[in-house]
Length: 126
Image 1 (tube, one colour):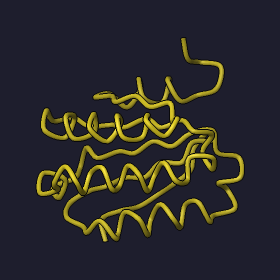
Image 2 (spheres, rainbow, N blue to C red; image 1 turned 90 degrees about the vertical axis):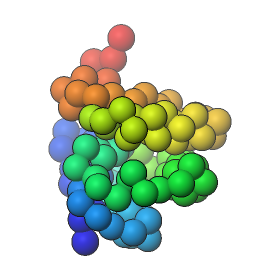
Image 3 (cartoon, rainbow, N blue to C red; image 1 turned 180 degrees about the vertical axis):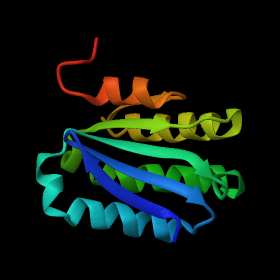
Image 4 (cartoon, rainbow, N blue to C red; image 1 turned 60 degrees about the vertical axis):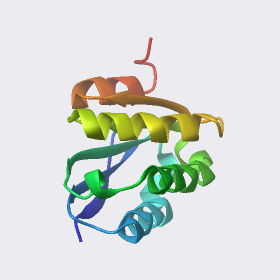
């Protein structure tokens, strides 16, 4: 499986790399949310920079994943940073961001990890 999660400075990071199924993403996010370290989470960083599978996803699949993320938004203080480095991935993450924002989740899409982390850190955002 090419989907993993970790915790750093109160942020849950879900990394998607290589090829994977959408069920793998749901499983990894569910495992992260069930992890005791999630109790102190201040945000979720969804990093798709290494994904080769994202380009194969339909708009409907992206929206469905965004809705799944939004269903659990209280677990990460309703703050989501999406990280993409290609134009295609950035566009798909913007589509997902719109869907999540409609559910009251503060969301932003980034191309740079440092900017995404800065935006998520408590007290650091402008």
